[in-house]
Amino acid sequence: MGMRRNLCFTLLVLSVLVLSASLALANTLELDKDPELKSCRRQCKEEFKDRQKKMCLQKCEDDYRQKRREKQNRECQVKCGEMYDEGGQQWQVCRMTCQNNYMNEINEPGSDQGQEWEGGQEEEEEEDENPYVFESHHFLSKVKTEHGRILSIPKFDRRSKLLRGIRRYRVAILQVNPETVLTPTHLDATSVFFVSSGQGTINVIHEDRRDSFKLEKGVLLRLRAGTTFSIVNHRQRDKLNIIQLLRSVNNAGLFEPFFLAAGSNPESFFTTFSSEILEAAFKTSKGELQRLFSRREQGQGVFVKASKEQIRALSDRKEGGGIWPFGSQSRGTHRLFKQPPTQCNNFGQLYEADRNVYPPLEDEDLSISYANISQDAMIGPYYNAEATKIAVVTDGDGYFEMACPHVSKSSDDEQQQQEGRSGVTYHKIRSAIKTGSVFIVPAGHPVVTVASNRGNLEIVCFEVNAKHNVRYMLSGKKNVVTKMNREEKELTFDAKREEVDRVFGKQDEELFFQGPKWRQQPGQGRAYE
Ligand SMILES: *[C@@H]1O[C@H](CO)[C@@H](O)[C@H](O)[C@H]1NC(C)=O
Image (cartoon, rainbow, N blue to C red):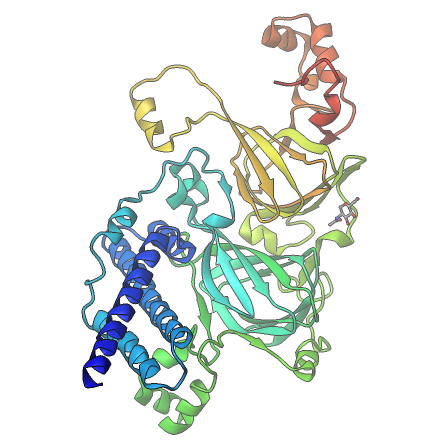
């Protein structure tokens, strides 16, 4: 009997060991595919350099490894439940073996490194063929909880030298889930909010008073750096989505939210102070402070689900500062869609806000436009004289084409110029875009954006360096060529003026045109290509 039992145990222990080893192997194979680890690593590469980057990468790997060990342990325990009767002796031994393996691995960090990280380490930043477009996999998450998210696209000058001109800016997306509050926060960046969908209220604590503003699609709000704000989504179903253009005040392109709220993920900035400091600052006891600042449970962070009554109270805008021009000049919001479009035809509408209709934009040297391109239609070709356009697709899909004088491998660019590469060639940047895509159009670069045949394509554009900007049309009414005199036309194209006029004078719409698909005649192939 004793012999048999021992044998059983030995077999049991062996089988658990084999089991956890095979789980480990399976996990190793999954490793390079793990999206969270990938995104963590990308974040390190884009945010940091040298030693900091190394430390950041190391932390990603450590966190990942710990999570994987925990998962392995859980899976091992589950297997015990499947193999043996719950509560029985064999079940207990099995579970203990799982636990021991887990503890051994924790105490011997590095024992599971070896082969599995080699692939990961070699992964290097791929050369960017098209640094002008950011898709969802480029987004970094600052805060991610079940009630809301703050995402941002990487620093522009990290992505490519070609984007150095806008390195002080950053695009972030703020998403507040239904019946949820983003608790008071401030940023070390000036920000311009554009509500792309949903409804809610933003409460703003200014130096001398508190203001409340209604948020709905098309609302613009400039908040100066350091202003404390909170946001309420009072809807039962819809998320509240806000696109933010941030301009850093500390380090170009870096921004951080500072959360006042108590919580542990992320934590309140208050809790980093020593308790004797807080006791003195608040003239209160350590116990009371601890109770206040550690009330919220793990995982609950800055986004907090609120009761119906709380939501109602927080959405009460009676004391509100009002909407520009009725509120204080530099503090109100501006509703982009409350004014008629500045350009409008069958193929689309353009809404624009500049410093004349919303004065805070003057401080930011910014103008904002919203293009609603009809299904199968297009906007452009045109170029901006001085402004760089940071565009975010809010709805629909399609593509854009841009003429770029820079070679695709941005890092070679200067070298080639120094080597005296003669002549200028234009590279065609063409890219599909869809809801959530961000794309950049530098000043002077001719661009066209085309909506798909599935529906309208809606894009919000932040134009930086806007003060002296002019939009120059390259086709349609008012295009630059029609304003040239005869000699210019003939010399430019080496053709008769009439011929030039026939081409440049035919399109009689402005800015928005019928898209290319409609030019496709059976048997004639594509009109352009
Ligand atoms: C864009 O145009 C479509 C169709 O004309 C319309 O339904 C939609 O409301 C427009 N979007 C905005 C933001 O005006």
